[in-house]
Image (tube, rainbow, N blue to C red):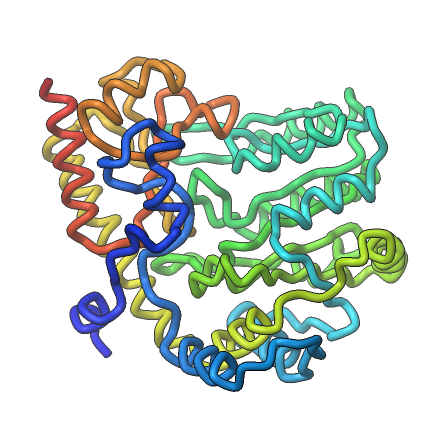
Length: 396
């Protein structure tokens, strides 16, 4: 199937389908008539094989207690080996209904109240929430932004760990919202600092399949030939890759036996060790049959990014679009037009004038003021409408 046919057959109007992305705009933004470019899910149907297997299970009609198939594990293990050169053992795999849930579990399990947890801001806002809501001490090391490209300040990162006796680091790889796919040498430096100072690492790798052009995702667990695997808990899922977030099925990968035993004891208390039966079938099928589907989706995301970049260069030359290496989330600095204002000051420009519902940069913490995050996993027409709105807002 080519891109044109894919877009024709797999992009339904999601409005009125109880869809968070399109159907809560009135409650969230105060206006139901905005173009929805915010939350990170796709406007594309899941792979056809996933839909067919779910139809078959629904038509069978019995939804009682179920077991987890061996094929579910082997599909994930084979995917990771073939696509990321990561050889995962089944014994390392645990369940969580979502990566964010897994982050909350791990913060609660591997730290105590008052302990320090470090993140790199700006970063996905549930990282902040997990730390603050669980009464941990939020420590941040701000990413360095040089003309739109982000890097890590390793000296600051290590100093913050030492000065605050940090116990846990939440890594975002690839990074949301700045779109970096970290190089192995960058991950090596980060993880060596953590190992040196006894810091456990939660590695959120939910966007690990959404890597663009010639960039390559390196799983934290195989950096430097697995040298740091004993301090890492990796969280990932098929949810971003294949648009399956509603299936509530994510992976926890823990190769260290001691950390894994602690996690298992914790899960006994929660009694939350298995997921939705349909979610298991959807994930297994996506990993088994979804590679061609994903290839087309990545091409569409790249096309949408290039269109956005070219139009902005011509019509909004002072907007700074961060180079996108991974994820389908564009990170756009509008401060030349709006000033480095927080959400309240951005609202008139973005919502009232541009008519967009987006993620505001300040939601992602320090370094986000003046930015917006745009979801590119949608039809090209929506990208055109978004740019049209931004240009109109700037001209006004």
